[in-house]
Image (cartoon, rainbow, N blue to C red; front, side):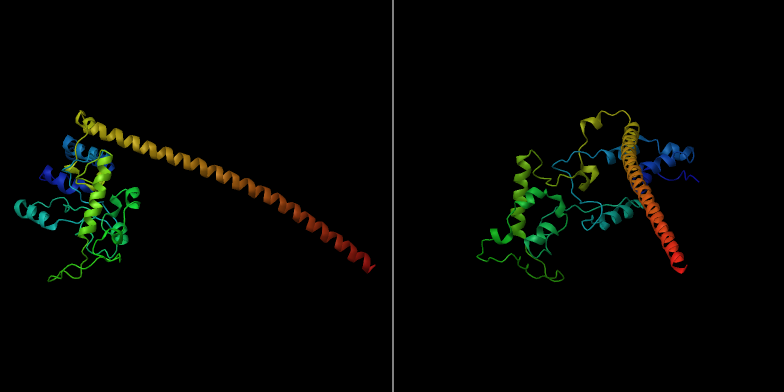
Length: 279
């Protein structure tokens, strides 16, 4: 049953992040209440922005990818504060963080781990990463070892590495790399999916839209059509592979029949010779 007491804001903040475009289309067919709820253009704007990532601005907030070892870190405190003030369970909120900072690389032992294992290390372009020097190449303390030293021990912090100087070198190199290509020198990661959607800029194309619902459905139809075309190509390839394999099996069966006939003919000849010897 439709709950008419459900505030639209709760639907946007708590339910919509869990639903796909297909789910929304199904909900519109449940009853009049859900149809009206799912017809609001505010909701369709959110769905459209999922399929059309906004522009990365200098003020965009980096929170990392959605899953895997580089998963985002939930800001439980901010979520609790919203619930305490409004009694509404908000959508998941994530802490902002940047890759290759002293805090995100504090457990990296060497520059190899720093560049390839630390949080969100995949945000950096591979061609830039390949041209970076190691920690042992840039350190100025007279030590040739590539191992980062430890931070001064504080209560409860554990044994953490001090990557401050190398982080500064990597960040400066990344900033120069982006500047040469006309990209943001503040929001260094250039993957829109790694940012808080609400902090991304809206493209001029999106601003001119009259109906986000129509635009989102058009994009969905194009995406499904493209996926189906790929499946059709794969199906045709599978059919050709099957026909080829079947033709080989037919040819092998013909050879087997011929070989079997030769064996039978040889056995008959042997039987005739055996009979002749007995006489």
